Amino acid sequence: MAKRLTTFSKFLITLVVVGVVFFGGKWLLDNTEFGQNLRQQSTSETPGKSDGPKGNSDAIKVGVVTWGGYAGGQYFNEGFEANTRSRFYKDYGFQVEFKVLDDFDASRAAWKRDEVNLLWATIDAFPTEVAALSDFDPVVVWQADWSRGGDAIVVRRGINSVADLRGKKIAVAELTPSHSFLIWLLEAGGLSVRDVEIIPQSNAIDAAAVFKSQRVDAAVVWSPDDEDCLRSVPGSRVLESTRSASNIIADVFIAKRSFVDNNKERMRQLYEGWMRGAAEINSSDANKRKAAKILSENFPGFSEDDTYQAIDNVRLTTHGDNRNFFGLNADYAGVTGSSLYGRMADVYRDLDFIEGSVPNWRLIAYPDLVENTNLSGPEHAAESAKTFTDISDEEGRTKEAIATKRVSINFRTGEFQLDENAKYIIDREFVDIAKAFANSRIRIEGNTDNVGSRSSNVALSKKRAQAVRDYLVQVHNMSPSRIIVVGNGPDKPVASNDDESGRAKNRRTDFELVGE
Image (cartoon, rainbow, N blue to C red; front, side, top):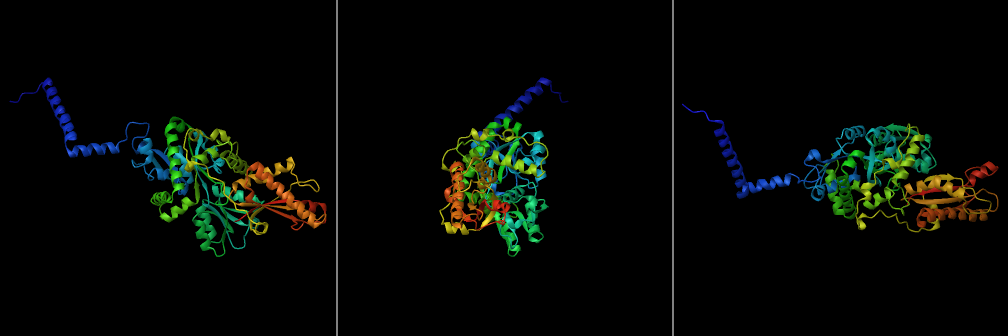
């Protein structure tokens, strides 16, 4: 008859079994090829102890759309999925995951639910949505890109300038970067959205489809849909694109303030790595090709050539660009996040798209990550202003004007010096447009009434136009080679010179954006 084991006997047997398993397993790991392979596999797949995330569930998740402007981070990450090949993981010890969220409302809902930690936005349109996100205390942490050809306005045959859009039907996705671009271009031509018929669309893709069906006169579309529109509608053309309107649409990333505060060093490292990736792409076609391959593998229906062009249609911003954007460079005179955000808040409020107050830029900007990062070298420098070549007066006079804005600047009789009121008018009516369309030439045309001799009026009108150019160069640091000066005298009246009212309209300065 078997005897029942005592409790102490069971304890001794358990110790023996555990010891055999432990020391046997240790011997297996230390003394066999199988054990060594198993140890290496475990080490490579499990992050070490650090501030970084451990596994995909703890990766920093970034919400993006199908757009080439985020390539810096995706290239540095070696793809969209969280992985240990990522340089974020190798250099900083954490993983990053990119989630494509093309549906606008779904992307905002995902951010609110913490399904993504960072989310794309554009500074021009952000004033229209910031109030709806206020419960989550959103902050702008860095700029990823400027659109440089990724957005375009296509028009049917017979529309050659912004003035020709008056009364026309324009398809556009409201409260999006497309809408902002249209607003800027109309203003550059002395018009507003109230001077055209807006045909609202859900997105830029739908706007392109409506244009191709020839139900509208113009549409604001994305690249490469602009090329498809031109193929589909005979005689159509691109009136203007963000390749010339180079400082209007700024892609940024937002995060909850609490998330950034609680992960400040990892967020700074995420920014630093992203900027390193952007600089490498900007500096090497081979790196741009590699980035395009990564994007094509994650954007269904896009070839590598398509995504290469998508990257070409943006300026991937560098650390130097971000210092400018957040106003950390006192010598920078271009478009900042503050100026763009504030201006568009006013514009959208005037159009009744914003109710209530919009938080000041200082309350939503989070420049700490940029300010506390040190990246040096020419590849990290800010973008240089476009270089314009000198052209003859005749060539400058005959260049086609895309947009003309007529401004009344009062001069004393026979004089051409600018007084303080004239400078205020130039600042208010034109300087922001000139900065936003930084890749376009400017033509300044002086005009007079017909009182006095034609020759003296032509000479005087040119001196007045030159005075405006000198002001833009000396005060706003614009290149003199960019600005064309023309004196029309009485030769281009916009009203009758038979009465004082008409003569007053003819004494004006025209600001024009002209193509190359």
